[in-house]
Image (spheres, rainbow, N blue to C red):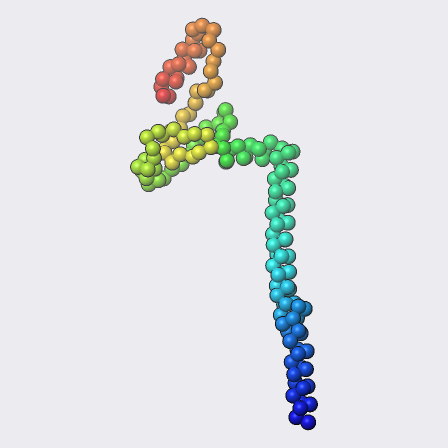
Length: 148
């Protein structure tokens, strides 16, 4: 009788091993369920991202507002009739002056931490045609001298 009990216990252990640790065991199923939940969450995040990008593409294709917004914030562009004003805290201006290179000019698309002058009536930088010396040309030269 003792031999039969030992054989039955060994058979029970051999049957239980694949159920828990085998290819289709409970532990593997639990692990796959966790991977599935993680992948579903990642898919929903990516779907949201794709919807945002599709909306942005549609805005860029259909209207000028999105293009104008990108030009303003990413490239630092302004319209001809606008005045660009940048507020800088006094502490940031002093720190920027110490760390800045010798040139205070900023290039297109880069923001400078140096204080900005506000010009109420900026002079256009578009070169004028020279047809001779007119009163308007002299006034423009004088305005450039005062601004510069």
